[in-house]
Length: 344
Ligand code: SAH
Figure: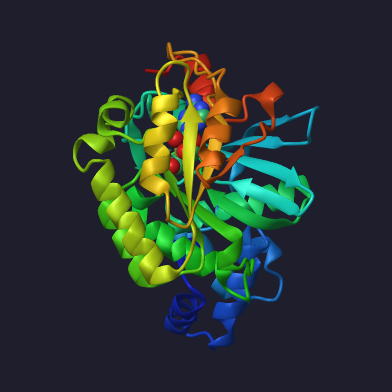
């Protein structure tokens, strides 16, 4: 097996050369893969011998739609894709005035164990390959017929726990011969893996880093997010400061508002203390209810937002999309696992 879909144009060029083909075949192959072809038969300008070799290597199976839900409210589309090894992942297409945005998964399941999140309930099964990350964008675009201009790595999984494949994906999706999506149109969301944030800072990419903060103090954050028990809030903010110093990119902080847990005036004041004087943006997310969890959505979102803004901190409340189709955070995959009786 050769994972052709995870290869760069240069690597495909070298691979084609190894098959005795001229160098330009690499670019042709990359372009075909970027269009989401279902089989090598569609690659009409490649010689039969090369197509046969690609088939032998077994590398271009498409993503298959396992389930698809379209929101009647706002046109959000949620895909449950079946991967070639039988695992399922979710991708969500969101329609905005400024263009279409796709939210992709980075792993099958997640190891991070956040208390409010449906994606982590069955643990992590495996990392996605760069090709599987890319195929979510390609096949969502192809199946929906909506051109995609923005990508958020905010689906199932922790992208910085799959660093090398995510980094490779960014190169592939950004390539002019492929989807050609600019870094400024890509956001990556992390629960706060310090080493990953530092590695990413070194790359100096123009993407937007979102940090899932959810609490400004160690007591609250460690209760919600096991990742905080290793390196606490202070270390996380230090990493964020380093990231901003290296890249000059404003960091976005996600804050899922949970009734009586992280939504009090005391929490807002602590958060303002942490962020005052930094270049940051807080995204307040009304908690999505997860069946398996006792946590409830906050009823104090507006007051929390006002308190932050009084202290000069930019805070917005995320609009809910696809609320009629469970379009959030691993919920569709959970349902499918349960329906098959395989859910943990
Ligand atoms: N692992 C990454 C990206 C995936 S989660 C991360 O932690 O950032 C995408 C975002 O959805 C994160 O901010 C996550 O904390 C949030 N989230 C997860 N479950 C949620 C829920 N039930 N309600 C609201 N936001 C949730």
